[in-house]
Every structure is written in structure tokens, then in C-alpha cells.
Length: 568
Ligand code: PEP
Ligand code: MG
Image (cartoon, rainbow, N blue to C red; front, side):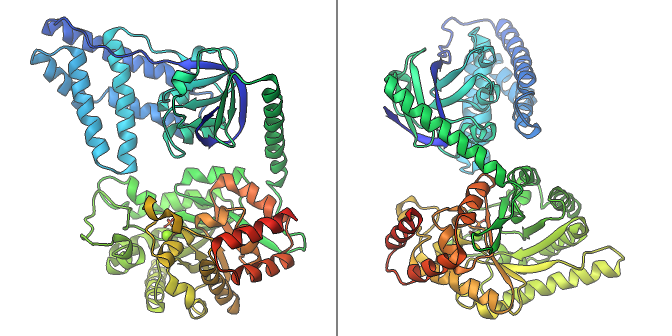
């Protein structure tokens, strides 16, 4: 039995298909400059044709957005800069293979050195394209995943984005790789294709032979090689139960989230881009509870996105949700989120520094553009706006004041604006949670950002693995802050939601329900499991549970309490 990381849920049982990529061995003899230029040119043409073919074959399997990866690869293969650098090296007397490897390795190192997730992905793209190019230069054939015509479990050291895109869902029972983590590209693709996947399995390639029987337990992150009859039977049951459960959840798609004793809450989705709306709708989300607009700014490469660009994105989301509520968070940049075209000040603690609403109130030009785009889009659906990182009442009043000014300006210009926009705030700084009952006089609603609220309450950087043990959503101190936020909102008849990771945690849901949370906003794939959990509970009973939880000493005690309650 081998251990790994469950990256995309499910159980698969079948024969191993080992994907062994050809080893690159550089040519020893030297070619003439003309010959090497001709080899390189032929290889580039073949690489472009190969990518186009792979894209064509993957078209039936993938969405427009997923296919976009091939366009990125084609652009790279056609890139005149890359080409001229390689040709330059060949003209200096180097072989085509060495020149290609040197130039692409430099490019990969440069992208990887930028540290940011976006550039890491670009590095993966260059790796993918240059590997294909090198194989074509050396006349090595790359295994063709689209040629598989029986049900198999794919076993590989790693799957490149184009490998994953070639997987035929009808024959791929699942896949497992030696490297990768939950957020690696192949893992994300596996979730979107709904194929079970276990990644990061040490020694996988040496332990598994082609044709070995495999059990892929992508619920617990295990790979069993050549299992016994008995093990196969056990896992067939586990697989069928999982599929039954998944299917059963689908009946909840169009159902409201109502507890056993008739209390209704909303289960909503978090999105980063307009295309994420599809997942929220398909999983029956009752609203978008958090639209993180910073991605619009991070995807823009040269300058801040224009008012019109923003308007189009907001309009697309509002229309996509067909009248259901969309909570848009105004720009939350800074901390770990940077922009290419904007210089942030050097600070010792960027997470405690110039970010989110602090930056927007300092640079009102940026803030006003976003508010205008939002106000113009407001007629296309049910818009709510919230400000991130509010710490003081004056910050909220000032932000709301800018909003009112832009609204009045647009109205006087004759632009149509909805008269039903709620303006609220995130509660993610302990000061705001403690003083929530004062904030509730001014804000139409709250959304608790537990990712930050916990980091600031425990004084534990959310990016640091060393202190990750302090991320304790169910610590009674955090629960008391959440209670303060909810009670504060309710005192003035406001609603209180939550959009941090904790909202999608099914173990936290009973306590949050008991504390009176009105809206739970989470990633799309968590919506149905959360609805199932909430609809199986009684609000009254959870109130008692929450009261008990608030009196506990540690987060472990609260977890025990919830588990024993659920077991009953
Ligand atoms: C949060 O802090 O919980 C939150 C939802 O915002 P982000 O994760 O984008 O900081
Ligand atoms: Mg936050």
C-alpha cells in the first residue's frame, strides 16, 4: 500500500497504464549550422501541429476555459522571441537540442524565480512545450494518451497540463502521480473532469508495473498494488457507496437549505472570476457570497483594469446568477497579493500594512473606478457590495461616503442604477468583530472572513507552515468573536454571513448554525455536502451545542463535542 494526497475524490479499481515519457539524451555528434536550423524548423512545425491535434482530440472532453491551455502552448510554440533566441544559439555553432534546452531552461528558471503562482504556471507551460520540442528534435515519440481504448488507471511520475487534457474520461478510471499536491494543475483538472486522483505518491514508478491491478482510494489518499480478491470486494463497496452518496446529493441542487425545525439559511458560492459562476449554479448555490475581484486586477498585466472592463465582468456575474444575490468585495490587494503595475511600499508586515480598504481610501481614484463599474452593472441582477478589512467605524463611513458620491454622480449623468443595493463589510479584523453591534448601525450586512480573522486573532501568519497549528477555527476564542459579529448584526436586523474557508467545513457548520449564521459561502464543490449537513440538523439543538462550545477551553474539546453530538 502506498500513501499519497487525495486530490480529486472517488475510488477507482483497474489495470495500471504506466505513462513513461522518453528520456531525453542529447545528440553527441555535431551538425552543421544549416542542418541544425532545418531540424529545429521541422521540429517547431511538428510541435505546433501536435499541439493542434491534441487540442482537437480534447475538444469533446473539455470546456472552453480548459482548452485555453493549448492556446497558451501554441502561442509559446509560435513565440518569435523564443525562436530567435534558439536560432541565435544554433548560429553560434550549437546543436538544435542543446540550444532549445538552454534557452527554455533559462526561461523556466526566470518564471520560477518570480515566486508567484501565475508565473509558476507559465514555467509549467514552457516545460511542457520545450519537452515536446526536444522530443521532436531528437525523433523520440511521446506516448499518445488519446490512443488508450480500455479502462485503465494512469500511473505517471507527473502529468503535464496537456497530458491531463488528453485523458479520455470514458477510459480513465483515475490517475496517480509521484509528484504534485492538492493545488497542482493536474489536481485541479482532475477535479474539473471529476476523475479520482491520488498525487504525491512516493516511489510510485518503481513499485508499479504496467498492467498491475490497482486500487486508487482517492478518498483517503491510498494506492494498493495487486490487491487480494477480498480487498477488491471491500473497495468495490466503498466506491459504490461514494457514487451513491454523490448522486444522492444531486437531489439537493434545487432545494432550499432548511433545518429539521424549519429554519432557513443560504448556502452560497465563492468565486474569483465570471467563469466560476457556472460551478455555483450547477451545484445549486443560493447566491454568490464572495466575489474576490482582485483576480481581475491581478490578471491585468499593464495597468489597472478600466471601468468598462470591470463593468463587463460584474455584469456577466450578475446575469449568470439570474437575479440571485451576488456579493462583490471591493479590491482586496496587498498582503500576499501583488500587482505587476503597482509598486507597494516596503513594509515589515505587509499583512498588517497597506492593503484592501486602507489602500482604496488612500487611492480613491482606483476605488471610484471600481464603484462606478459596480453601480453601472447593478441593473443586471441583485448586487451587494462589501468592503474588505474594515477596522474602524470611520473607515466604513468614509468608504460608504465615496460610494454614495459616485452613485449620485451617475444618477445626475442619467445613468440607470439599481435602488436596491446592500452595502456591507467583511468582519475579518478582531476589532470589527468585537465592536460589531456598533458597526451594524451603518453596514447593511456582515460577511465574516475567517481566514484573516483567525490569522489576526491568533497572531499566526496564514502563509507560514510553521505556525499552521494555530489555524483553529473551532477555538472558543474565535467562536466568541463570531458570536459577537452575528449578535451585533441581528441587534439591528442585519444578516450575517461567512465567506472564509470555515464556512465550508462540515464540522464547523453545526456550531455556526447554532450561533445564528444566516449565510454560508464556500467553494462550489462544498455546497451540496454543506446543504446536506445543515438540512439534517435542528437549529434549536445546535443552539445548545453552540452554547456549550463557547464554554470549552480548547479547540480540541469543541471538535470532540461536535463529533459526539453528530454521532448521536
Ligand atoms: C477571509 O479572510 O476569510 C476571506 C474570505 O478573504 P481572503 O481569503 O480573500 O483574504
Ligand atoms: Mg480576507
